[in-house]
Length: 237
Image 1 (cartoon, rainbow, N blue to C red):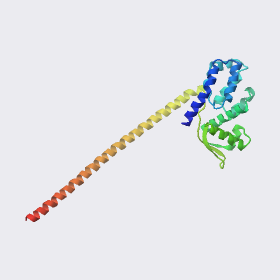
Image 2 (image 1 turned 90 degrees about the horizontal axis):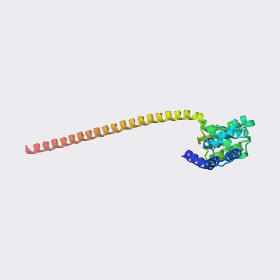
Image 3 (image 1 turned 60 degrees about the horizontal axis):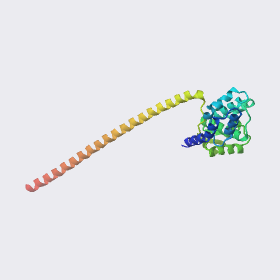
């Protein structure tokens, strides 16, 4: 439920940027990208990436790095940025924090227990206090749901928001969902079959109980009649 609410919320916050992108070209589109990467509550970007004016930036060597930066925020992680930093625009403190948040989301999707030491190294954060502040902020914004275990020095994750899917991953995702749907159908069919068997067994048990009670009642009635007849015969003779 929380994931659906978050997806709806971040999509709503992206809408003004989608409208602006219809008329923003060149330098104006670059500024739009800078703004959306710093905008509070916007964590999905695939719709913006699909806009023609945004894709047009790929044709200009001066603007193309900003398109790649937007792609990195949609699909990539902080280590990806570090690896490409020399060919990408620099990040503001707000953008850097958002990319670290998104990187934690990616990690949380793969592993439900994230050690502090691993996170410190992966996100290149120098101290635990700063890391815990980053995690608490991510939890507050409902990017992830979980709890800090300061004794074990790890983050225990319950769920993480879904990130944008790369276009080349769509077919694989559809196939996976199709397999899941088929498996779910089979499970539901098996459950229905068990419910039917249980219902039939219950009916059979009820019939057996009814027949047994009828037999007992008949035997009791027969004993009563026998007793009455014996009593009558005794007095008559």
